[in-house]
Length: 571
Image (cartoon, rainbow, N blue to C red; front, side, top):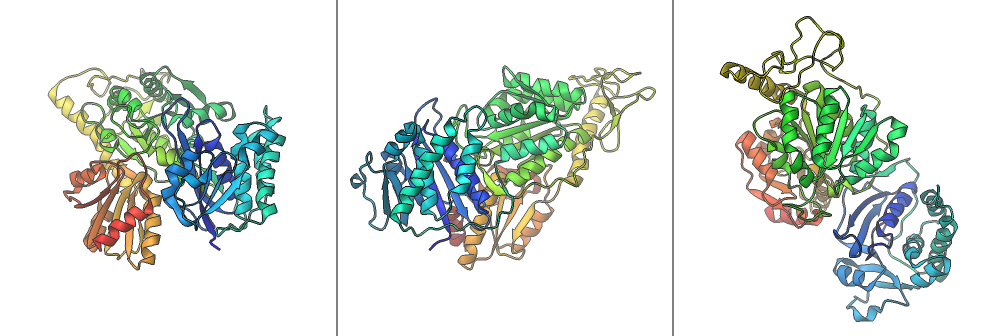
C-alpha cells in the first residue's frame, strides 16, 4: 500500500469543483495529514472544464505533482483530458450510469470504480451534489473515517444554509457506504495522523492575516483575478478588525486612495494583477516623489493585455522594478508560500513607513489560490515600527529635510504648528516646488539613499540543501516549493543539489549568490516566464549572466519532475 495520493476532480463549471477541493484539503489537514491544492479553470463566466488537484501525504507537501492516482470524473471530458496523467495503478471514480469508459483506451491496471453519482445526488437533493457523493466515496476508498467530513459539511453550510446540511451529509455518506459495502481495494491508503492543529490556507489569505496583525486600517481595491480574494477576505472581516474596506470604481482610484491614506498616517493596502497595476503606475510615481508609504500587492497572471486571466506566471518582475517614469526607490518582495506571505503581510507596512516608499509584493495565481497545509503562523516577536513620525511640530519643520539615510522625519496632517506638504513636482526641503539644478541633484540623491539603508536590513536569500552541492538552482517567489520537492527527488537519484531562493527581490542582495556561484559547477535558473527576468536582474546587479535556464510560460506552474529531468541532463 502507498501512503500518499494525488487526488483530482474534474467537471463542468458550476458543479462545486473548487469548493469540494477546499473541503477535501481541510478534511485531510484535520486528519493530521498534509495537502497541497491547485485549481485550473477557464476565464469564462459560465461553463468550461474545471479541475482541482490535491497532493496528500503524511510528510509536508510543498508543491503539486503531475501524476494523478485517483481521478473523480464528473463527466467524460475529465477522463479524456486527464487520462495521460494517471499512474499505472490509479483509480477512476465515475458515474456508472452516464459515462461509458469503454470508449477510452484505459490501461487494464487502472481501477474503474463506477458509482451512480447523479442518481445518489438527485435522491438526496440535486445533481450539483455529485461532488459531495464523490468526496464521500474518495474518503472511504482511501481508508479514512467519515466523522470529520460530517463536521466540515456542517461548518460549510451553517448560517443561512442550514437546510443544505442534512442532504449533503446524506449524499456524502451514501457515497462513502457505496465503497465500504463493496470492500473495494485500492493501492493508495491514507492513515490519520496525530492532529498538529495545522491550517489549510493560501498565500492571499495568509498575507491578509499578516497585514491585519501589522495594523492595516484601510483597503481600496478593484477586483481582478487572482487578487480578488483579498478584497473578499477584508470585506468579510472589516468590522471584526476595524478596517475600512472600499471597492473602488477602478485601479487608479484604488492606489490614489491608499496614497491619501498613507499621507494621513494610516496603514493602507491595494491589491491587483498586472493589468490593474498597469493603470496604477503614474500614481506609484506620486508615492515615490512625495515619499508616501504604500503597499501594493500584485498577483501575477500571464500577459500581455488580458492574457490568460485565470492562469499563472512570473512575468511582471521587470515591470515592477521599473514601473512609472523616472528613478525613485521602491522595495519588492516575492513570497514563495503561505508562510512567507504572512511574513510579508506583517513586515511590508513596517518597511513602507520606516523608509517612506512604496512596497510591491509579488505573488501569482499558483500561490495566491494554492492552499496548503501549514503550521499556525508565528508573530509573537513582531512589533509595529512606524519610523520617523513626529507627534509635535518642531520649529521650522522641513518635511523633506536632507538626512544621512535619506528618510526625513514626517508629521501627520493636523499636527498643530505646521503645514504638511506633499508635492508631486520636484521640491525643496520645505516641500515647495523648486527646479534649480543643485536642489534636483540633492533631492534625487536623498531619495535614492534609502535603498542603501534598506539594503542593510533586507535578508540574504535562503540556501536550502547541501551547501557544497555542485549543482545549484536559483529561483524566486512561487517556484520555491516546486524546487524544494525537486531536491528531494534528486536525492533519490544520488544527485547533490541545492536551492538559493529569493523572497526579497529588491534592493538586491548578492553576497550569498556570489558564494553559491563560486562553489557550484552548474547553475540552473528556474523561472515561470519567457525571458528569464530574474536572471536579467542578477546580470544587472552583479554582471553575472546565468547560461542554463529552465523557463516555463504555458500559463501553468512547474512540476518537480521538469526540474529533475533538466538537472539530470546538466549533471
